[in-house]
Image (cartoon, rainbow, N blue to C red; front, side, top):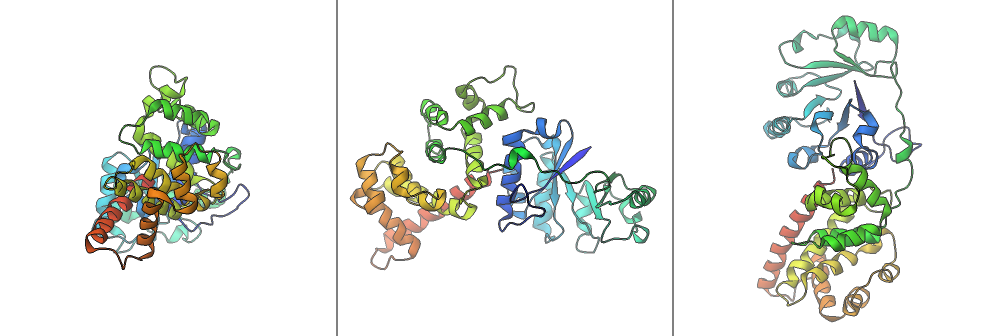
Length: 380
């Protein structure tokens, strides 16, 4: 009936190891939805996936295909009124909610009012000692997880469980398609992201940039032609895909690909990079500089960390104006001055700046940080 999506840092890993739950979720969903496609991965079955609290705070940014997705909430989540409101909002959007490794207590009981499925661990619980009567007054289905043998399965059936999951039925399987290193054109992806943040993106320019990244093109065409996105006619060109997806969805997909990459890119570095780029863009508006060029300078100024590639090497591949190159390599010229100002703000070195400028920098930083966080949250 269903599958559970598990994250592993590599094809050969037997257990999950990650420091950033958001990145782990982004990588797993990127592979399932964008690279493989739910129709190819699970057909008409349902997919369970783990979502950290940060995802639940932004329900409008959850992935599509809610009819086939069940959001699993971990048992370490702190239950309060805010948390319950977040889950209710997600349910109103049509998502089903499962409580993973659920243990009933006074603190967790309110979750039974909003949950659809309760997952109870058969390794840490003895079936005969379980009291399932308490769940009958709630509209929940019971799922016995970690069912390892026929004896446990039969006991769970007798107790009245509705669903069963465990090695007795099937062992986890690594998907070969996700075991490879992503091979996208990171240079093109950065330029696409920069183009997408404009008020009126140039679709012809986007199409030219996408042509430089066959990996991304294949993913976009596969995604737009999946059973859940397909319209009346099949998408056969990049321009058609762009029109169907729209700017917001394109931003989400490109950012997800960069966040989910197996390279040195991390959510933290992406957040810092996009915040700096946005600050440069907004400051440029009051300095008679081109905001688009300022955004590019801010983004490329951290490219060595973002992509694991030397700045000088990347600049050889980009058709940048000489004054932008001077700003990036030597911090010279008007854009170099702008970049030095943002870098000084980041380091807290504003002792010689006026209170008015300091306040403006603070305001722009708060706006840029919010914008960057929202963009990264679309990586789902």
